[in-house]
Length: 334
Image (cartoon, rainbow, N blue to C red; front, side, top):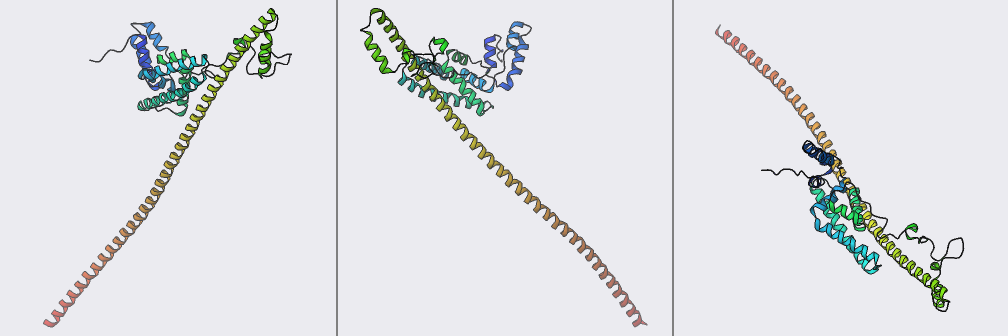
């Protein structure tokens, strides 16, 4: 006996979002119609579900079929964020290697699953999937959305993992300006002074009056905070550069695949050209053979006509010979 389809929203949504996008809309509407009479609100919620893109569907397959890999992705994302927070540069570099390997494993698994389901992922869908996985690594909310397995579109990662706070968020001048020079309005801030000058300033602060020492302590704290933010920004830039290198690697791989596909297409076109040429030759041979057959048929007919004519002449000659013999016999008898 076949099991009944699920009637709660969570189970219905999970079942729908592992369907290929081409089958999603019809299945969604069918499920909504099934429960419309018994639960109009549930039917309305089901009908409100959006069809996923091909990349989102592939990510949903990962969430539903490969929980262990998605869990590894979430754990790695947490480790990357903690390393970023604690400025653990060496640890961050090691985790970046893990990140590259895990995303590659997830992407390859998704491509196998999609191909097995009859919907292989094109290069643009693979790129969208890669962005979704990167977003899940960088953002806990994106990771939870991926793990839920009901994505309708690709997730977008931040500009780079652990991006430094903006000027407004940090309450500090923008770190993207020149560190060694202040704004055009006057004396540069203390934390932008050259390192030797800052060290000299801190050394002389112990000889200053109490009020000045408090200002110096505050200044030292500001400088340490600035150094911390600068180091964090450096690590973020390194992570961004690593992501850029990986993107360049993926682009190069896609270019290689494109060249390979073009070469394969050219080989296929060459085969078609050769087959068409062979077909033309075969048709020419067939035409020549038909012409030869027609000539042979005509020759046979002519020969048959000549043969019939010759047989007639033979018959007439025989008749003439018979009559001549008969006349000779009668003459001899007379």
